[in-house]
Length: 218
Image (cartoon, rainbow, N blue to C red):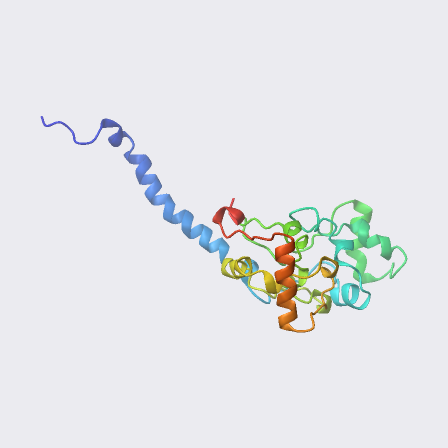
């Protein structure tokens, strides 16, 4: 009997190889399907919220700083959704009986959070750190657009990988002075001046955005 070309363990591992060959395409298709979910990538996605919160009123007309509600944006990866207590800091006295705030009052009484619907929802395999961007001169407006003009927040940018990489390869046009981070209306005197400011901030703060896969896919 001729000597087998392959070692015996190969035959024993055939079921495993078969399972890998079968499951790998399914896994890839699953990742692609979730990555293409409209709630993840669709520009214009604007879900209805349990409370009709107007950013145009609060951030625009009243001038509330983004960080008053999104308290962790400078210190954590996630920009925290405002707690009911933050809402009630004002609304125990302002529009306290408004029917629009029924869900807020119920949340405050029960201790259960308001079930806000996420608008900007990256796939689970993507890591994004808000504090790393905000503390280096990237304003909220670069990713979220003029939220201070939105009655209902919607996704304005694609948030696709290529869009992120464009900024990482050339961040200068998207950098601004730190004191203007939450001033969504801020503009330099000209595009050339904006670029000059960005270049100076990049040099001064040693900003070198990574384009390595492991930066966002961990």
